[in-house]
Amino acid sequence: MANYSTNEFKGGLKVMLDGDPCSIIENDLVKPGKGQAFNRVKLRNLMTGRVGERTFKSGDSLEGADVMELEMEYLYNDGQMWYFMKTDGSFEQYAVEKKALGDTEKWLKEQVPYTVTLWNDNAIHVAPPNFIELEVIETDPGLKGDTAQGGSKPATLSSGAVVRVPLFINQGEVLKVDTRSGEYVSRA
Amino acid sequence: MTTNWQPTADIETLRERAHLLARVRAFFTERGVLEVETPVLGQGGSTDVHLVSLSTLARTASGRRRLWLQTSPEFHMKRLLAAGSGPIFQLAKSFRDGEVGVRHNIEFTMLEWYRPGFTMAQLIDETTTLVANILPSFAGPVVHYRYRALFHTYLTVDPFTASLEMLRRLAAERGQMSAHALANEGRDTCLDLLMSMVIEPQLGRNELSVVVDYPASQAALARRHQDTDGEWVASRFELYLDGVELANGYDELTDAAEQRARFTEDNAERRQIGLPEVDVDVSLLAALEHGLPEGAGVALGIDRLIQLALGKARLEDVLTFSTPNC
Image 1 (cartoon, rainbow over the protein chains, first blue to last red):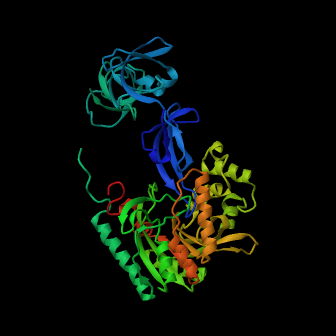
Image 2 (image 1 turned 30 degrees about the vertical axis):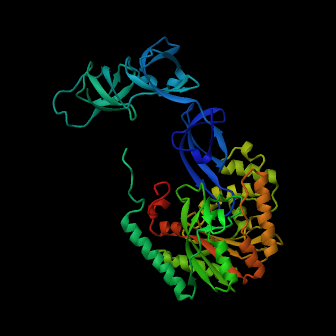
């Protein structure tokens, strides 16, 4: 991979830091009145998801990371690995470890496209779509009547996620959910 | 794709900017300081290893020559002083390649002025008076600090006597830099990092902070003298407001031989670390040999002062067209 100098650090650039692939979020120049300039860089470690800051001497460089984000459909899992398939027509499949799946495990549904981050062709992260439609498999019986009144109850969805839903929702209904906040949006 | 042709500052901000610049000019006119305009292109550039000069090839009367976009109007203004201009000021377009950020733009406006016969203390006083004049809500106070005392306060370390290992360790820890990246760095890099990352953000909070007695190795174009502790320090000051470095002033170096030696040292260091050498401004050296009146001078980032005066988040908010939207 190519090396990138601090003045090429742009949001989204993928670089290697301490052996892990990272994505650059922000880069700002700091400089005392006279003297050495530094770049204060905010990066996300793509293995851990953690965001941290690092300082570099201006002009220093980091090795680029071979990182790609691809759209893949979820297929199935065997309890050890979770399998996804590229949506580009190649039918190429990738096996993903539980660690890389993280929180996304509770938003998995077959044939839904996910964004899979590959580092050196290994899946290191899976991001769900912002909105997903899932069936309620368990919740208290729905309340008839005034649906505008507040109040909510927990509902377990087919993917395993538990979300707060309005009281009028019944088992078997399909809901639209925001995966970023984990909140109910509407009936699908 | 649509081309973004709009200015980075809104028109109302540009009106306020013009008003503040008029106040700057009035301030100096009242004090009998002459406004001058010096070239943006010069035959020499800044040899400072920490500045990256832009240069261009031009067809001149004496043939094709490399001309340097000035990183500050300092050299030309000193030539005017040597020619007997008396006190002068300038709002000068200046260029520093690669300086990009929320407080930096490659092309910016420098307010620079020179006061023959002034001591550094007198110039500090004039600089803080100007800043207080420009800032609508500034109520003071102006607080003076010594570089050494700041390191004692914020890092409990002595910047002059601490071992290099100690400074590297502190710089890695407090400056969020990897120890590996600092392994071959000298004292000044460590001190610069600690100053920028740890101390500067604390300065100028509900006050105007003046910092003096910088290490002699950070003198640039300032004289050096021994401070009250017997350390060699630079006769240089910096001004801070809201954690932002605003101005850098010197008791000006007038010794041509010393100036020539510092240029030569800079270029030697440039060769050593693989940076391109910069043509030395021989006209400045000739002017110094002729004689530069004793005095003090200061460079103030006027874009930053306007940014603070108008409460804007980014430098580009007070520039018509920031780089690269230029």
